[in-house]
Image (cartoon, rainbow, N blue to C red; front, side, top):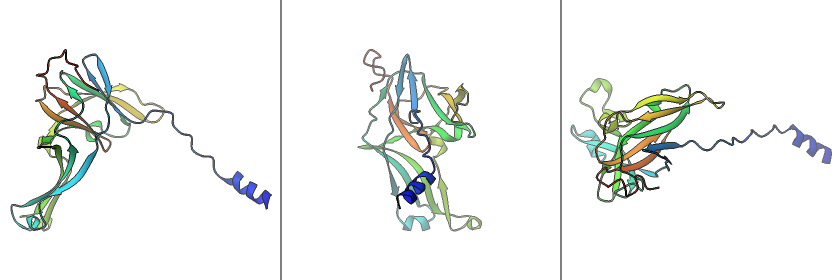
Length: 195
């Protein structure tokens, strides 16, 4: 019986090696500072009613909602750049986007989907869209900062080509949000970016 147990143990496949590489992260560069951004926790919420789906002007919206009127990280200088890694077989502009968040009384939010009654019956009764609205996206430029590593990832330097307005933002990278506030009215002597 002991030898049978030993044989079963030996027959078990080897465990896969654990990667010693640090978890995927987004790094922000502001002036001479480098800050590894922390993930923001977003809650999924829906607005609208079931009735609104079947009226010509009503729509139901899905949103990602962030607690608090302002992000913990406050940035006061521009230009702002980011560095992030992605698998080599994807287009970076489809997997890394910069979003302008809408500020409410005690939260920030971004629309992630919408659905409503369709006037074009050839497409069906309900017209649904998944993803961020174009007007909430900030244009970015991408360049390879490091070539493909042994895990098949490319590190990109991501820059914002034109000045952004003051407000709340989030980088969306591989299904995670990394939020920050931008306000260039604050004097630079008062900490360019607070960790």
